[in-house]
Image (tube, rainbow, N blue to C red):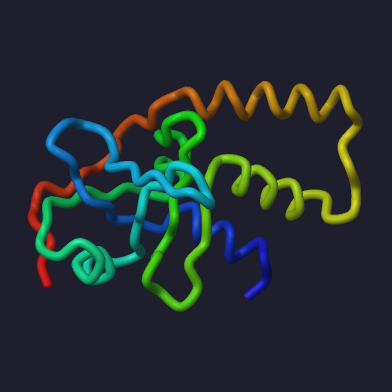
Length: 136
């Protein structure tokens, strides 16, 4: 599958995460990678990680818009290919898809960064949250 199709599919993929008592995310502090939110591509993966717990889900695209400043998501930490995800990762992938061998002009890059930061600050409307309990 071409990279463009992988990133397009990833944006719409549903991710599952442990639902805390208060609205928000359970953030884990790590020495190497800073603050992370463990997220999973399946409820079963979440259950292997956290056991029976309350959970919520959203799309990748919505998740990166909801991440607190400086926090990244660690996708499938117990899986074969875990990876870090944040708004910059998706922006960089978009830039590689659109112009694989061209670098943006400095002024254009600054404008794109400002637009991305503005978009990152907006919360997604219509986000779905699961109120059920995950299990193992």
